[in-house]
Length: 123
Length: 107
Image 1 (tube, helix red, strand yellow):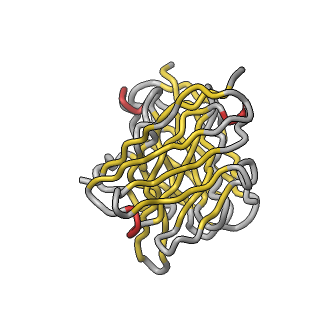
Image 2 (image 1 turned 90 degrees about the horizontal axis):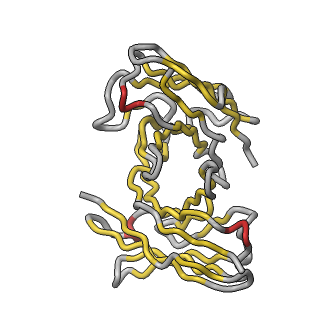
């Protein structure tokens, strides 16, 4: 069974840095596209970033230039390096697997989610 | 970026009711749409992908329809465990945007 478990959240001051980890089991992170999604307190879901199996990466405008997604095949772990953190980065951060299936075209979906890790940016 | 607007944002319903939630995209996304259910304090759960394909293990009272810019999630007979917040997501392009959510509460 595919599973994901995030870690690394915590309290950090504005302008600070944090690295989130997402350990995968039941599949290899380099064989799938992997994403980060966040949810600010009392708010909806916000897509943050994706890394393709090829290594190509995409980011939301709100984090571009500050966040970096990466992965380590030997540890089967996804990462999110977060720099220059702002108060509005405060959220629960989920990692998720983006799967795909062939019908008439490839269709995509986020089928495996971790339980999330909380990041609080505050002075 | 493609924006998704769900309606309603909140609905109150009773066990056994049929409910429908609409998701509208600002540009055509073919059938690149997924629906998720989120219970408070839990991670989202995939319900439907490709606009109308039910994820394995999801009860058949859930169904999805639509293509292009207008999509619908229907629950044929609301059960107590269905009271949650529902999100649509487009997977046609980046960023992979979500709708703002629809909270389904017990009447």
